[in-house]
Length: 255
Ligand SMILES: NC(=O)c1ccc[n+]([C@@H]2O[C@H](COP(=O)([O-])OP(=O)(O)OC[C@H]3O[C@@H](n4cnc5c(N)ncnc54)[C@H](OP(=O)(O)O)[C@@H]3O)[C@@H](O)[C@H]2O)c1
Image (cartoon, rainbow, N blue to C red; front, side):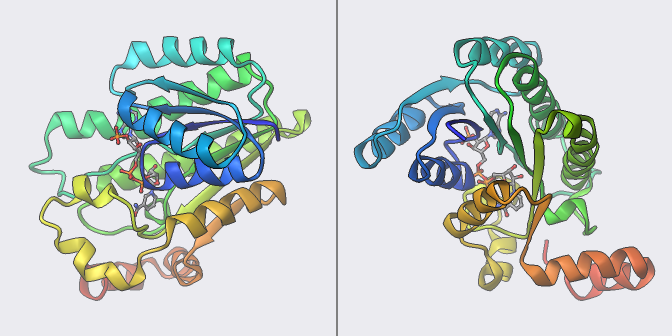
């Protein structure tokens, strides 16, 4: 694929995906909220790889703007072939006590932003593949992530259904389910820093995950699940939901 658009490019996994796509020779359209961070990333990639890079700021919290801005970006770059829906955030809190702003932010970015970006891509660009960054939270339940997990379950089911719609057009839809990744995600998700300390030894390397994700797209696989043990856990929780609830509450309750 010749050109990719990546949302949330200023973040941990998004930055790694941008670098990996450039290494693979793809021209880039990088979308993020911070103009400074986008330009710094553009300069860093341009110093190492001879690809063309355009940057745009979009804040998915501003709903009507999202649709308008993404349509505008694709009208400027109708040759984008790969869309990477990476932007996302979570707040690890119980629903009682979560602010409406936090709920809105997660749904606006993880659900609405991703949906409208995909729609604009399909309508105005040259779609060959969509790569959606979901989470193991879509498949496995754990306390303090009801809204985040539900937004990621949306991403997974959206991807699985869209894959069927796009099959006749030979447009691939690929989805990544990852456990905890070593990125700044947790600075927002859990401001106490306690969660990340407890799961530190299991953190996934985002550079490695970015490589594996783009390899999956190239091989036209449906989904990537990392770590593999969590994939087994996810299957187990479908077969034995009561036992899985016990483990989620009593054994793996790190949040
Ligand atoms: N880290 C994990 O453990 C983990 C595990 C599974 C799945 N994921 C998923 O992986 C993806 C990448 O996250 P990450 O771990 O790389 O976290 P990150 O470092 O916090 O990066 C998230 C990116 O999304 C952007 N973003 C957040 N809110 C936005 C909004 N309202 N509008 C536009 N962009 C927004 C961020 O921009 P700003 O810098 O401006 O906020 C940032 O570029 C997310 O979809 C996340 O849900 C993460």
